[in-house]
Length: 537
Image (cartoon, rainbow, N blue to C red; front, side):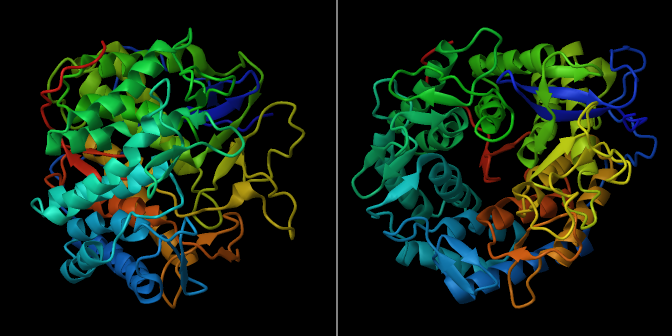
């Protein structure tokens, strides 16, 4: 018999019929809306306090962790794209040389944390040593969200230091040719020296949906800053192509053809290669102060499709592969934010939202985000206190011992083979998605449980990922307290994970969610009014 939970579990699962669904595990409780009974926070142990202040001691501990990581990188690998703390060395993403991934991805975290000396040294490197004139292939999506996004955020937070905008314009001008395809969809790679888009070796015209549709915040904000409408139009054309190619039930397969502008036969999923498409629909609407109604409609259509097409409670509608990527945990906070900003009857909802302030669709979205976050938090209840890259959920007939993981609903592939090399799924690579959603959920509810969860995650990172000589490393097996480390510190650890943890313990005046939109790499952009007329509706 399946493990039973009093709390309804929402999980994200892959579907063999090329869909990815949301499915409720355990329990029989109803999630149908009852207007008089609906509550934003359902936990009996909720600790609500909308007038919260900063928790300085915890912030100081998180700042100390950032300094421990940054000082090691600066000592061993300053200017390199990536850092390997165990080997005390850096590496670059192209044989032609680095383009400042690590420095630029981290610099706005320094600004937010008030690390003046570290910031000044990083700024000096960007001003004097950074070059984008590299004759090699760089990923269009990653370069946009990390490097272009990081430069634009640093420009804003520095009171418009021109060095950051100059570098951003140089980079963007080198990247624009990636959009020069028949359809207007960008190619997945770009040669910054040749200013030329480059296809993948295995399929020259293939690009993932997330990669094509997670460039818009950055290029639109740059257009706003420079009055260069070309940046805006290139990014916006992509969204028109996607809207025109939309499939019948409102969700997007994870691959497109950059030449034809069509979707290719591929899975639909909310995790890798699909995730940030859904994220940026909402964020494009919010970035221009909710003036571009087309993105609100596209966002609402996709959320409705998730409920009608991918949501499951109890029995199965399709043959499912019940798995959840850690990446999907971003969606929890996004759904709650979307409910408060796009599905509300009032301009500014209460903290937490009241039943009278949200539409029925808003309540549905909020419920889904709330329960998904509870599931994501539960996957951190592992021997190391960290969540695996991928977890699976028990289903009838799976042939597994459902008691093997302490009666949990979920397991990590390969955990039954004690003493053998862990599976790829078992890794924790310093990912930020759950703490991102904890930050958003806390800002929207004032429920201090979310701070408690975030602090436990931080303590587990300190215990299992910290390299004593400097830096933090991924671990190979979250189910083993004696796990080996992997010699890599992802740049998003400094850009996202520690930033969101720091902001979780800040007061609400620091980068408020009604004034800022965070790009998918946690670089904050101020909300602005656009004078550009939309190409489509």
